[in-house]
Length: 387
Ligand SMILES: Nc1nc2c(ncn2[C@@H]2O[C@H](COP(=O)(O)OP(=O)(O)O)[C@@H](O)[C@H]2O)c(=O)[nH]1
Ligand SMILES: [Mg+2]
Image 1: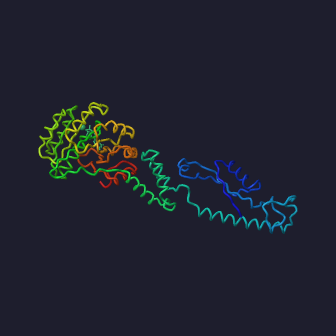
Image 2: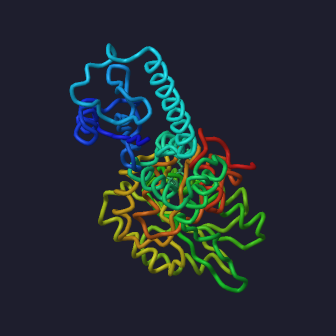
Image 3: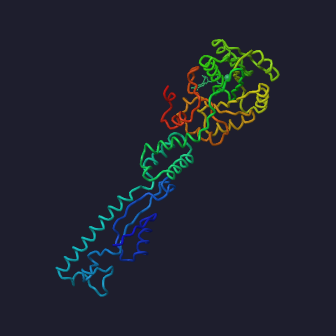
C-alpha cells in the first residue's frame, strides 16, 4: 500500500498538496506538527505540518462491490453499501481492517527507524546554554552548526560526547602565549598597558610576587604612572614589602638611566598609566617610553567586566602602543564570560595571563585554553577550577 508524507507551512497547504498529488479520493491517515528541516529551521524554531495520506485505503462510504480485487476507485455507477450483501460487507471490512493494521504497524516501525529528530536535544541544549553564557548569537549558531555537520546522527544524541567536542572546538580557537620567559643572564622587559582601573598595578604586583617568591628571579619594577602620586605609592608599597628595586619614570629620557639603576635583574616589570585611554597624544608618548625600554612583551590589560563592544573599542585605541599579548583581569566580576569570545576572533594577540580576584599573588593564572573554556562554559563565576 502506498503511503505518502507531505510537509507544508500550514495544514491547508499540506492538504492542497495531498489533493494535487493523490487526487480528491485521498485519505488522510495522520497529521502532526514537526520542526522544519535543516539546522536553520530548527534554530529559528520553525514548525511545519506533516500530513500522511494514501489513495489506496477505502473507507466505508467508498467500498467497492468486489472485495477480492480492491481498486482505488469505486466503479462508476456504484451506489455504495445498499447493494452489498451482508457477507460481502463483513469480508470487505475484514480486508480493510487487515490493511489498516498492516499500515499502522508499518508506520510505527518506519517512525522508530527514522526517529532521529532534525536537531537532537543535546545540541539544542548547548545552543541555549551558549546564549546563557553570553556568547554572541552568531557564534552560538556557528558552533552548533559545526557540531551538527561534524558529528554523526548517532553521536549527536550522546550528551557527553557532544559537550566534549564543543570543549575541543573552543579550545582550538583560543590562542595562548604561555608564561613570561625569563632566561638566566638575559633581562626580560615586560610592560602592562591598558585603561585606568583595569588592574595593571595589582597585576604587576602579582607577577612580581610570583616570579620573585616562587620563581626566585631577580625582579625590578618601573612605574611610568606619572599622573597620580597615589598610584606610584601603590606599587612602591608592594616593592617595599617584597624588597624589590623600583624606579619612577616621568619622561621618556629618564627611561634608560632608570633601567640601569635597577641593577642586575632578570625581569623588569613596567607599570604604566594614563589619564584616559582616549588620550591619543599620551598613547603615542607611552609607545615612546616602551620603545626606549626595549620592551620584549607588551601586555594589553583588559577587564572582563566590560562589554564586548567596549573591549574591542579599547583594544583598537591601544593598537598604537603595539601590544603583543592580551591579559584579562576581573574574570570574577563578570557573571558570564561568553562576551569575551569575539576578542579571540578579532584581536591578533595571544592570551598571557588571567586574573580573578584582588589577592596578591594568588589570583593570577597563566592562560590555558582548557581552563579558559571550562570557565567560559561554567554557569556562574567562581574561583579558578581546582583552586
Ligand atoms: N575583582 C577583581 N578586582 C581586581 C582584579 N584585579 C585588580 N582588581 C582591583 O581593581 C582595582 C584597580 O586596580 P589597579 O591595579 O589600581 O588598576 P590600574 O589602574 O589598571 O593600575 C583595585 O581595587 C584592584 O584591587 C581582579 O582580577 N578582580
Ligand atoms: Mg595603576
